[in-house]
Length: 199
Image (cartoon, rainbow, N blue to C red; front, side, top):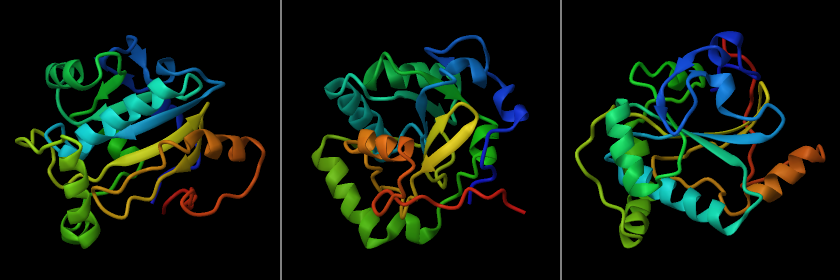
């Protein structure tokens, strides 16, 4: 469950470092009036992490109106730089070894079923056929991914991951954003989960 309906000052003012970003807090890394995708990667050795970055890069290349993207990763800046140099050199990404943002956004740990369910195993075949392979994990192997749409200080949408290889609706993201702008309710696969503050 997400911790917040909106981002707290503590989150927005948290100082960040990473790849292709500005020096300063999180709030300086994106335009306050435009939606931004905040994508939390599992670990940089994960084949689904590689697939996600490649797929988002391809989707944004095809569509000039695609929203800005901000990745989060667990490893140090040097590891992130090496990874993104290979998979998307123009990406913006925040290094989060302490997993401050992972925890604040409520990105959970995986269960055994999240890793080994039939859907997860079929997704491994899909990712492999696309040329994405596992390598040695450098971060938390049990970390689930996270995918959020943020506008200003508001979390306006998030993807519910059924397992580690579940795919967010990247190609139909603009349709989703238009629906949100018009105040329309969304239906599957654009499931909007509760954004009530936990506790």
